[in-house]
Amino acid sequence: MASQWYSLVSQKLFMARTLTGRADSGQAGDESALEREALIQGAIELTLRARRLLLVMIARFYQHRNSEPESLEALIQLVGEEVPETEALQALAGEAGSWWQHLDQLDAAQGRPPATRKTVSAENIIAIAAASGPDRSPSALYASLNALKQFADTLEERHSEW
Image (cartoon, rainbow, N blue to C red; front, side, top):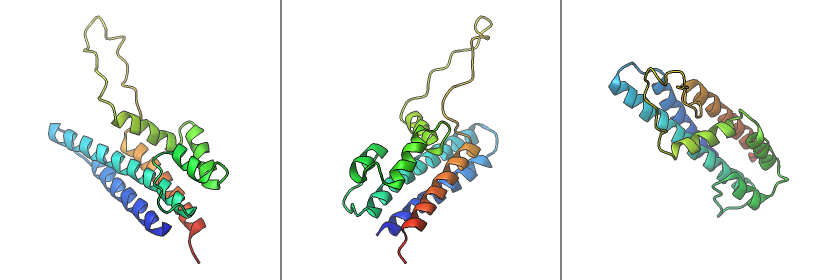
């Protein structure tokens, strides 16, 4: 039943939101910086898991009971491009700044070692720029979490049994 998958998606998002909240209320210091990083990475991982479970939930809506697509492309191959859910997700995947793209960027960043940083000296101070990469701030994570939750809620509402 798809509503069980919805419950699992909601659970992962709730836990990710809880970790993000703890990271947002952290204190300064080396130990809390390490704890904050662990909380942020844990929240990102739970959010990425929720997104993968959302794909499974959609597959279940379309009666693919034994399939667990791990990507949007796999879901499209399974249920087709013409279903409203895959159309919406494809639009989000192509939309700059969307929660789907933000999660794609976070996923890519989580799977790579951090970039090496140049040391600051008098000769290269001008060449130093802010680190590039996805926004891992609690506010950005909250925005993506809330958007993903709203998307899942809408799907569950649309497909729920009477």
